[in-house]
Image (tube, rainbow, N blue to C red; front, side):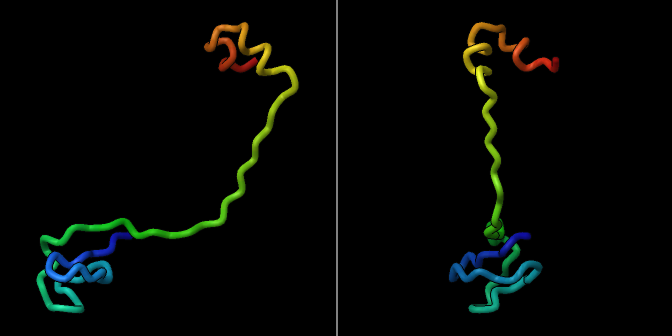
Length: 67
């Protein structure tokens, strides 16, 4: 979702508006800002015993290839 920023006063307007709700300026040439949103995420990190030392001696394509 994009938020329209008024080129005249800098007010952030609701998406789809044609005129600034603060000063009434036309928003046709207004620059668009991406809508920011906070999200809670979960990250999982896994390390296989001995994998790093083994991978250092192999070709990178061999490390990436499925077994």
